Image (cartoon, rainbow, N blue to C red; front, side, top):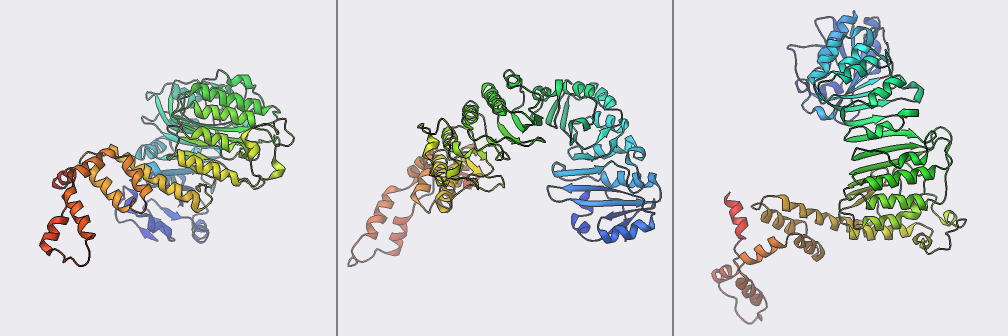
Length: 530
């Protein structure tokens, strides 16, 4: 057990390594801060009649550290929690505080933790993500969430708001700051949504812009409202059961970063819905990132063999969104077989000006084979590109190689984040494509570019002529300057001397040094002087 000799104000005053061991810190108000593990929890719980409060702090994107604060009174526990959770992080963008709301260990957060204490925690680290899990959030606490003077990042997970969200929405509608940060509202079922239907509709119609909005399934009049909300990024799970394919034809989607989690429900003609969605995305044409996952929902799933029309609509969406940088089709393999259409999809990506990342569940599904052929389809005898498949999936890698050879900016990943490849053949193309990335050096200052290009040419591109050619093709102006500043006459003399017969005596060393001396590029000399 330790006692603080002075009050820390930042996390770095502790150092994260101290919490990797069993540790307990005593405070003068009669509370104890513990990092949670089975042994220490049981030991300290007995001494404090099991009265305590647990929470988790994540520094970056690791597993986080679980803490528990024990005390004789609720007020003392709340005071120490406020102190500990208000310590400033150096990098708050990677920080997250997870707070369970339910009354556990004889401590009721909603009843005991004062609104001003919660406000103090928020204000100390304004860029941190605050996640409240389960239980019931009090109306007073919800008002604190809504009235911060900065864009707060909040996640509400499987909980409810005490007054069905009335005070929360009222406070948001009067908010002085018209911009909110991340707002996530996750719940298991539609009937467990944190707010009443009326308040949800009010929330969705607020004149507030969000950094990111993440919402679960909504029904009836609210189902399509999230699409038109003012947000830089929208992640939305919705069910097709209560929707018609025509509902998407004139849908207003304001965001440029769209993540759709589509549940099929008991919709039989769900392929028409997907076609309508992709056609609308193509018409709007302003998306930068697009992620679409299709799930069976709670009613089982319907898997159709012929996804040709869906793939055609998707290809149209790819072509008509020139600013698209990332396309993610992960987590759809149970309902959609993209494998037969990769050739056409890859061809649509070959000349795409901005696409950098394409993600799929897997390039060659485990059940890819002759039995998956379109033998029962009316189009099985057509001249469609899919009819040329080998049946074992090997053709997919030929198409992939062609894609990454023509579009050197793009990388294809599977759902685990691994780069799709058949081994050395495609890996070598990816490696070559890395040289194409050196064209970004044109953004560097004119004094540094010659040095950077020369370094890349010597260290990274010296292995093969192909790499050198690709590098210099992107920096022809630097190549011209290198040649202009070089003493070509001395170069030719040096070449001739190396080709002289062995019977001719070598020149004097001083003359050889003079002849082989090549002046550095003018721009490089300028940079060196600076």
